Image (tube, rainbow, N blue to C red; front, side):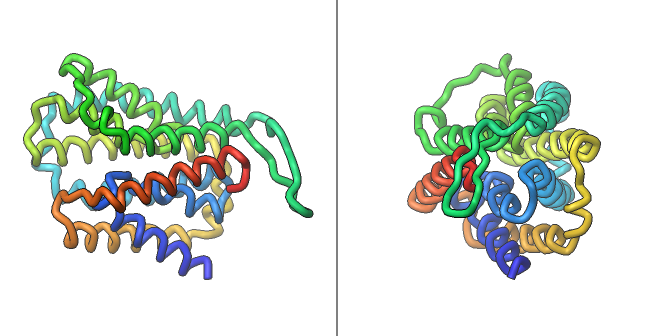
Length: 257
C-alpha cells in the first residue's frame, strides 16, 4: 500500500506541475513526510528532484546561458549550503509545544512551523497576481540566486524566486528553461551534500525501494504531463493545488503531518 500511495501521488504531482505552476518538490514533500521524519523527507524529495533535473538536463543543456548561470548560480549554490545547514540547526531544536488528540501525542516543532509557513508563503507567492507581475531589474539577479538558494536549501522551495528573477534577465524561452534547470541542479547538489552530512539517512537506506518508486513515477508523471499541456496553465487546477498547499502548511504548523 505504501508503494501505491507514493506512486500515485508522485505521478499526479509530477503531472500537475505542468498545470499548476507549483514545483515537483513542493507537491512531493508532504507525501514523503508521511513515511519519513521531516528532515529525511526533505532529503528524499531532493533526491527525486535531482534525478528529475538530471533527466531534464540531458535535454536542455545546450541552451544554458553561461553569464546568467554564473551570476545567479554562484550565490545560489553558496546560500543553498547555508540554508541546508540552517535546516540542520532548526531540526535540533526541542519541540515548542505538545498536545494530545485522543491517545496520540502531537508535537509542534520549530522545523514543522518553518516548513509549513514556507509552504503557505510560496503557495501565496505563486497564486497572487501581484507577484507574477513583479518588476525586478537585471542587476538584482544575484539577489535572486541568494533567495532561491537559501530557501531551496531549507525546504526545497527554490523555483518561485528563480523564475521571478530569471524572467527579467532577457533570456529566450529555450535559454530560460536550460539555465533554470542548470541552476536547480546545482542547488540540489549543494543541499544534498549538506543533508547527507547532517541528517541520519539510515531510515532512507532501509526504504530505497520506496525512493526508487518515487523517482520512476516522477519521470512518468513529468513525461505525460508535458504531453498533455504545452506551457499552459489551468487556473482552476492551480487554485485547487494552492488551497491544498495552504491546508497542508497549516497541518505542518499544527504538528499533524
